[in-house]
Image (cartoon, rainbow, N blue to C red; front, top):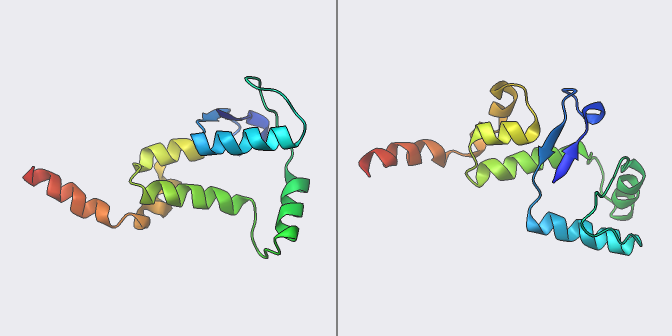
Length: 119
């Protein structure tokens, strides 16, 4: 579970985001490589700016911000058919208005909705 602390959240509210198996494996591998042996314990990452900056520089990636990962996360959820309210909750949006920016990424949703009437 990824916990966003209130002091780090734009909304000022704490929220919890479940991590999938792949994300957990990456974090566990990262912790082992960093020399940390904390299985089953809280893995506290409070500042990733230094590591993120090095990663982007080493990969020679330009004009890519950490926040772009948030947009990518939301886009992939919508394309995978996750409903917009769930995407809203995962992103921590107070209302659906901000989340609606991603609605255009699921054009098949309308056709699928109408097709349900025939079932």
